[in-house]
Image 1: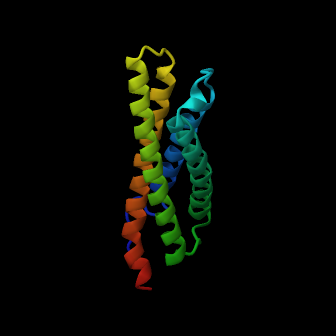
Image 2: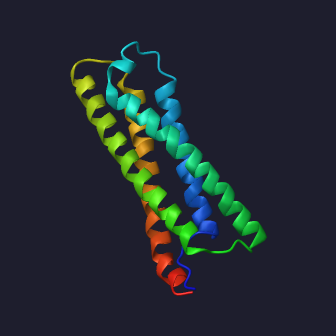
Length: 152
């Protein structure tokens, strides 16, 4: 089995998961601690909160699995498990990228209209971008691990 740099069960993959958890939680917190009364009037903001609400538990769960795999060093590498992880990361990375793009675009439009609450929206979109990039990196590294698992 050929292990790539940040494939499942390595310490670098654990760091990727911690980064995903940190950035998705930060994005969620920046959106939730908002005192703007028009927050729910914009679908993109609600969409980003929903997606980050999915990404955060996914990342926490996989970070715990990574930590267990690193500590025990006996977690069996099965192709079906890695396939589910790759598929979940792939879908969630594009969902969070879409939410980040839409939130950033609405924040820019609101800034041009004179809204003063847009700094939190921009920070939340930035954190969502970073989370989606880390998730896509994790998808790529685990996808590179799949062919060696399929041959066994």
